[in-house]
Each structure stands twice: as C-alpha cells, then as structure tokens.
Image (cartoon, rainbow, N blue to C red; front, side, top):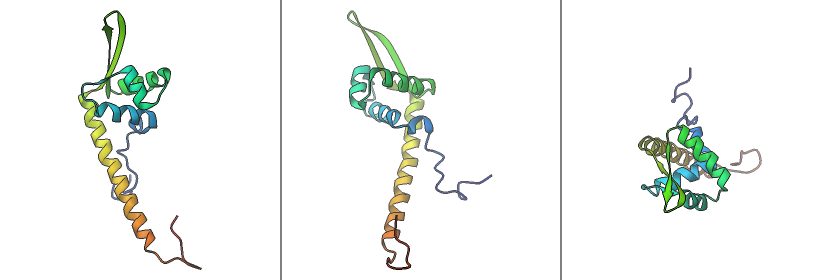
Amino acid sequence: MPTQSDAPFSYDGLDRVIHEKARLSVMTSLISHPKGLAFNELKTLCGLTDGNLSRHVQVLAEAGLVAVHKGYEGNRPHTSCALTPAGRERFLEYLNVLEQVVRNASSAAEDASSLPSGPGKLKPA
C-alpha cells in the first residue's frame, strides 16, 4: 500500500464531505460565526436555495460536523446551524491540507515559469 511519501500529492485529508462546493461554503460561513447562524442567514451567505441548503446541512449533520437547532422565536419557527466541536476540528484539519495544496501548486507554478520555452522545450500548462 502506498504511503504519503510515495504519493505526496494524493491529499487524503481533503475530506469529501467538506470538499463539495456548497458544503465548503456552509462550513466557512459557520466557522466565521462561532455562535451559529439562522437558516436564512446561512442561505444568503452561501447563495443556496432552501432545499439545497437543507440537503447539504443534513449531510454535514449526519457526519457530525454541524448541529441543527429547531425551535421558535415568538410564534415563528426558527432553525439555526452551528459547527460542532468535532466539525470545527475536522474543518481546521481540512484547511491545513488545502493550504498544502496551494503551497505545492504555487511552488510548482514558480518552478515551471523558470523553465526555458521554445521549439523542442516543454511549456508550462
């Protein structure tokens, strides 16, 4: 079985649950608001529809990353979402791996830009 040193660009820490664009938006919004957000605020920040946000929050909640609180404010139903402690920890680990991806890509781009180009020479992508 390959080790991380055998496949340094495999980025196993890029958690598939978090890495999906809408869920990444939800996680980023929630880590920026430690007390949580009302469903409608979260929907606005992420640019999602009610149904789309509801489904992505459900996936994150089933993974133990997000807690959903349903109740009432006055006579109106109120739903809010917040990161769980495990969700915060897992998201920070995800961000560390994502930072490594950016560092590796930046380094590779810098290295490639210093290569000679011309007939018979490889050009950077």
